[in-house]
Length: 110
Length: 116
Image (cartoon, rainbow over all chains, first blue to last red; front, side, top):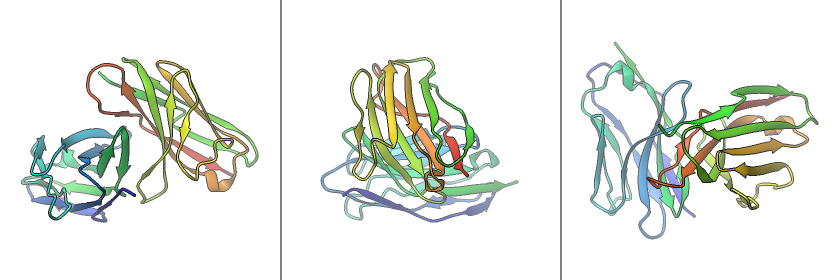
Protein backbone atom coordinates (compact mmCIF):
# COMPACT_ATOMS: atom_id res chain seq x y z
CA UNK A 1 0.00 0.00 0.00
CA UNK A 2 0.86 3.67 -0.03
CA UNK A 3 3.37 4.91 2.53
CA UNK A 4 5.39 8.00 3.32
CA UNK A 5 8.73 8.16 5.09
CA UNK A 6 10.10 11.44 6.32
CA UNK A 7 13.16 12.54 8.17
CA UNK A 8 13.00 12.02 11.90
CA UNK A 9 13.36 15.00 14.14
CA UNK A 10 13.55 16.98 16.11
CA UNK A 11 15.40 19.55 14.09
CA UNK A 12 16.77 22.65 15.78
CA UNK A 13 18.05 25.55 13.73
CA UNK A 14 19.14 29.12 14.16
CA UNK A 15 17.24 31.92 12.48
CA UNK A 16 18.19 32.44 8.80
CA UNK A 17 19.54 28.90 8.52
CA UNK A 18 18.68 26.61 5.61
CA UNK A 19 16.07 23.94 6.29
CA UNK A 20 15.64 20.63 4.49
CA UNK A 21 13.22 17.90 5.53
CA UNK A 22 13.50 14.74 3.48
CA UNK A 23 10.41 12.86 2.36
CA UNK A 24 10.13 9.75 0.22
CA UNK A 25 7.06 7.81 -0.73
CA UNK A 26 5.97 4.39 -1.91
CA UNK A 27 2.91 4.26 -4.10
CA UNK A 28 1.58 2.87 -7.32
CA UNK A 29 0.76 5.33 -10.02
CA UNK A 30 1.13 9.05 -9.51
CA UNK A 31 -0.45 10.32 -6.32
CA UNK A 32 -0.56 13.98 -5.36
CA UNK A 33 2.01 15.01 -2.76
CA UNK A 34 1.62 17.47 0.08
CA UNK A 35 3.36 19.17 2.94
CA UNK A 36 1.24 20.10 5.93
CA UNK A 37 2.33 22.23 8.87
CA UNK A 38 0.97 22.15 12.40
CA UNK A 39 1.65 25.11 14.65
CA UNK A 40 1.30 24.64 18.41
CA UNK A 41 -2.32 24.26 19.44
CA UNK A 42 -3.65 24.40 15.88
CA UNK A 43 -4.85 21.94 13.26
CA UNK A 44 -2.79 20.81 10.30
CA UNK A 45 -2.65 23.40 7.52
CA UNK A 46 -1.79 22.76 3.92
CA UNK A 47 1.61 24.31 3.23
CA UNK A 48 2.14 23.31 -0.39
CA UNK A 49 1.35 20.59 -2.87
CA UNK A 50 2.31 19.10 -6.21
CA UNK A 51 0.04 17.01 -8.35
CA UNK A 52 2.37 15.59 -10.98
CA UNK A 53 6.00 14.73 -11.59
CA UNK A 54 8.42 17.68 -11.79
CA UNK A 55 5.84 20.06 -10.33
CA UNK A 56 7.21 22.43 -7.73
CA UNK A 57 4.98 23.51 -4.88
CA UNK A 58 5.85 26.70 -3.04
CA UNK A 59 4.42 28.83 -0.26
CA UNK A 60 5.74 31.16 2.44
CA UNK A 61 9.30 30.67 1.19
CA UNK A 62 9.05 26.87 1.33
CA UNK A 63 9.52 24.75 -1.77
CA UNK A 64 9.27 21.08 -2.69
CA UNK A 65 9.61 19.35 -6.06
CA UNK A 66 7.82 16.15 -7.03
CA UNK A 67 10.62 13.79 -8.12
CA UNK A 68 9.25 10.63 -9.66
CA UNK A 69 12.65 9.10 -10.36
CA UNK A 70 13.64 9.25 -6.70
CA UNK A 71 10.06 9.08 -5.33
CA UNK A 72 10.84 12.10 -3.21
CA UNK A 73 9.25 15.39 -2.19
CA UNK A 74 11.83 17.10 0.02
CA UNK A 75 10.84 20.35 1.74
CA UNK A 76 13.28 23.27 1.69
CA UNK A 77 13.44 26.82 2.93
CA UNK A 78 16.42 29.05 2.41
CA UNK A 79 16.15 31.23 5.52
CA UNK A 80 13.97 30.11 8.41
CA UNK A 81 12.37 32.34 11.02
CA UNK A 82 11.32 31.69 14.59
CA UNK A 83 7.72 31.66 13.36
CA UNK A 84 8.51 28.58 11.26
CA UNK A 85 8.77 26.49 14.42
CA UNK A 86 6.16 23.77 13.95
CA UNK A 87 5.63 20.13 13.09
CA UNK A 88 5.81 19.37 9.36
CA UNK A 89 4.05 16.40 7.77
CA UNK A 90 4.65 14.98 4.33
CA UNK A 91 1.63 13.25 2.79
CA UNK A 92 0.33 11.68 -0.37
CA UNK A 93 -3.25 11.57 -1.56
CA UNK A 94 -5.06 8.92 -3.52
CA UNK A 95 -8.72 9.67 -4.20
CA UNK A 96 -9.61 11.64 -1.07
CA UNK A 97 -7.47 9.62 1.32
CA UNK A 98 -4.29 11.04 2.77
CA UNK A 99 -1.34 8.95 3.94
CA UNK A 100 1.02 10.82 6.25
CA UNK A 101 4.62 10.60 7.31
CA UNK A 102 5.44 10.62 11.02
CA UNK A 103 6.03 14.36 11.18
CA UNK A 104 9.19 16.34 11.84
CA UNK A 105 9.36 18.83 14.68
CA UNK A 106 11.31 21.94 13.75
CA UNK A 107 12.44 24.50 16.31
CA UNK A 108 14.01 27.74 15.15
CA UNK A 109 15.98 29.71 17.72
CA UNK A 110 16.50 33.45 17.56
CA UNK B 1 -12.19 30.81 6.67
CA UNK B 2 -12.37 27.01 6.55
CA UNK B 3 -12.08 26.43 10.28
CA UNK B 4 -12.64 23.06 11.88
CA UNK B 5 -13.07 22.73 15.63
CA UNK B 6 -12.93 19.73 17.91
CA UNK B 7 -14.40 19.31 21.36
CA UNK B 8 -13.12 18.51 23.84
CA UNK B 9 -9.48 19.29 23.21
CA UNK B 10 -8.46 17.01 26.05
CA UNK B 11 -10.33 14.35 27.97
CA UNK B 12 -9.54 11.79 30.65
CA UNK B 13 -11.92 8.90 31.21
CA UNK B 14 -11.96 5.71 33.21
CA UNK B 15 -11.54 2.33 31.64
CA UNK B 16 -14.87 0.87 30.55
CA UNK B 17 -16.61 4.20 29.97
CA UNK B 18 -17.45 5.81 26.65
CA UNK B 19 -16.37 9.20 25.42
CA UNK B 20 -17.68 11.30 22.56
CA UNK B 21 -15.54 13.65 20.47
CA UNK B 22 -17.15 16.28 18.25
CA UNK B 23 -15.82 17.66 15.00
CA UNK B 24 -17.44 20.77 13.55
CA UNK B 25 -16.86 22.73 10.39
CA UNK B 26 -17.51 26.29 11.52
CA UNK B 27 -17.83 28.24 8.29
CA UNK B 28 -18.46 25.67 5.59
CA UNK B 29 -20.46 22.56 4.94
CA UNK B 30 -18.91 19.15 4.55
CA UNK B 31 -20.55 15.97 3.35
CA UNK B 32 -17.34 14.10 4.10
CA UNK B 33 -15.24 14.17 7.25
CA UNK B 34 -12.31 12.00 8.20
CA UNK B 35 -11.15 10.67 11.54
CA UNK B 36 -7.48 10.03 12.19
CA UNK B 37 -5.55 8.63 15.10
CA UNK B 38 -2.02 9.62 15.99
CA UNK B 39 0.32 7.86 18.37
CA UNK B 40 3.33 9.72 19.79
CA UNK B 41 6.02 10.26 17.20
CA UNK B 42 4.01 8.39 14.60
CA UNK B 43 2.05 9.42 11.58
CA UNK B 44 -1.66 10.12 11.41
CA UNK B 45 -3.52 6.93 10.60
CA UNK B 46 -6.88 7.20 8.87
CA UNK B 47 -9.51 5.42 10.92
CA UNK B 48 -12.68 6.10 8.97
CA UNK B 49 -14.43 8.26 6.45
CA UNK B 50 -17.62 9.84 7.73
CA UNK B 51 -20.35 10.62 5.22
CA UNK B 52 -23.34 12.79 6.07
CA UNK B 53 -26.52 10.80 6.16
CA UNK B 54 -24.92 7.41 5.62
CA UNK B 55 -22.76 4.89 7.39
CA UNK B 56 -19.10 5.58 7.90
CA UNK B 57 -16.48 3.64 5.98
CA UNK B 58 -13.86 2.14 8.27
CA UNK B 59 -10.28 1.35 7.38
CA UNK B 60 -9.03 -2.19 7.68
CA UNK B 61 -8.32 -3.15 11.28
CA UNK B 62 -10.51 -0.45 12.84
CA UNK B 63 -13.35 -1.84 14.96
CA UNK B 64 -16.53 -0.11 13.90
CA UNK B 65 -18.38 -1.22 17.03
CA UNK B 66 -15.71 0.34 19.21
CA UNK B 67 -15.34 3.58 17.31
CA UNK B 68 -18.86 4.75 16.53
CA UNK B 69 -19.12 7.55 14.01
CA UNK B 70 -22.19 9.67 13.40
CA UNK B 71 -22.32 12.39 10.76
CA UNK B 72 -25.73 13.82 11.47
CA UNK B 73 -25.42 17.16 9.73
CA UNK B 74 -23.31 18.94 7.16
CA UNK B 75 -21.26 20.59 9.89
CA UNK B 76 -20.95 17.95 12.60
CA UNK B 77 -19.42 14.51 12.91
CA UNK B 78 -18.93 12.68 16.19
CA UNK B 79 -16.61 9.87 17.18
CA UNK B 80 -17.60 7.82 20.22
CA UNK B 81 -14.99 5.56 21.75
CA UNK B 82 -17.03 2.87 23.47
CA UNK B 83 -15.86 0.87 26.49
CA UNK B 84 -12.56 2.66 26.38
CA UNK B 85 -9.36 0.96 27.49
CA UNK B 86 -5.89 2.35 28.14
CA UNK B 87 -4.72 1.22 24.70
CA UNK B 88 -7.28 3.60 23.20
CA UNK B 89 -5.36 6.53 24.65
CA UNK B 90 -4.25 8.58 21.69
CA UNK B 91 -4.58 11.84 19.80
CA UNK B 92 -7.68 11.89 17.60
CA UNK B 93 -7.84 14.34 14.70
CA UNK B 94 -10.68 15.06 12.34
CA UNK B 95 -10.74 16.78 8.99
CA UNK B 96 -13.52 18.03 6.75
CA UNK B 97 -13.85 18.19 3.00
CA UNK B 98 -15.86 21.23 1.84
CA UNK B 99 -18.80 20.67 -0.46
CA UNK B 100 -17.68 23.60 -2.58
CA UNK B 101 -14.33 25.06 -3.39
CA UNK B 102 -11.03 23.27 -3.13
CA UNK B 103 -10.74 19.52 -2.80
CA UNK B 104 -8.46 19.82 0.18
CA UNK B 105 -9.23 18.68 3.68
CA UNK B 106 -9.28 21.14 6.58
CA UNK B 107 -8.10 19.78 9.90
CA UNK B 108 -9.24 20.22 13.46
CA UNK B 109 -6.71 20.81 16.26
CA UNK B 110 -7.13 17.32 17.68
CA UNK B 111 -8.40 15.74 20.89
CA UNK B 112 -6.11 14.11 23.40
CA UNK B 113 -7.79 11.08 25.00
CA UNK B 114 -6.31 9.47 28.10
CA UNK B 115 -7.95 6.35 29.48
CA UNK B 116 -7.00 5.45 33.02
